[in-house]
Image (cartoon, rainbow, N blue to C red; front, side, top):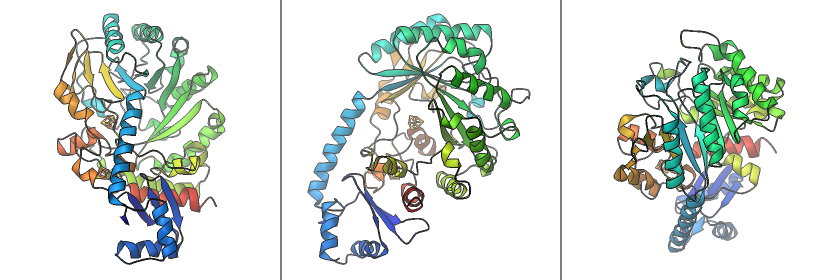
Length: 442
Ligand code: SF4
Ligand code: SF4
């Protein structure tokens, strides 16, 4: 019996206790200091007490290597089967233009194409997806630029897009800056809206200093009005706060604002935090950005001081939140990147892309759905084949089944190769997560 290569073991932040997690066997344990030291001894090649050793074998922390390889293969096949039946998220970008000039927007790089969206292009998109994804469960996410611009022409096109989605029996999500949301409510009510994602980066001036109109102008009040209008009309809202060092201190106030508005008690309301990071080009002010782990360390400290934040947002800390809420681990994650598997993106110029991280980048186009249908099969295959079994560093990494290899686009931006690593600080996140969910909630 050997120590499983899928064990993740470390000390819990601010505690004498340790955790031991194995996503392949599905076991997770908190170990007292004595047990933790016995695991340390094992790692150093020393024997341990028989009964402790027996419990480690039972839970799949000590394994027969051949048996573990068999289990790995079988769980991998389960993962592929499940994914093949998963719902596909199809993004559609009606325009890259935007009425905002956010300080951190990566799309400011994109030169607007001369072409404009037409009903003919929308028809071609629905023709393509009904053929290409026939028999697959799927839903549509309308993305930008800003899809909900206030012009009459844009409203007509979005209404037509939603009408076609209805005809294809597709639920729709929208990603919007929220500025013109209240003027779109009647149009949105005609569709099967799954969720409207709106971004607020803080309360009042904190938000307005980051997300303002092109040419200047505050946006906070109009967005809040739009969120209220959605919730009043039974349209689900997913509020996203994009965080960096400039607005992190406003998180407690943002949480209190959402609580005071009654949003957090509304079952149609949920939240997410987005880490501002260099996705496409170096931000001039990159010193204001958090690394993944430093962001979560800061949130961990903030939650300690302002526990009401948890009413607004519960950090995942890798798989910790899932484990806390479900009492069991999630299935092993052989691939964290849905691009070209359960996610595709399309834009109004007729191009096809792997996902939202690549959409609109000419050299990332994987083909066209308009005016003609074409596919770059070799490029698509690279995306399709990316998972932890295809990336050599991942295959030997003990975090692989929690990390899933990260994001293919971030990996490609870093190394030039989609099939390379985008490492997630799984162990460090679990150290925080076990502390937040299991030690501090006793
Ligand atoms: S490349 Fe990154 S952004 Fe795109 S689907 Fe994969 S994980 Fe998501
Ligand atoms: S991306 Fe890095 S941390 Fe994630 S599985 Fe691969 S090697 Fe491990």
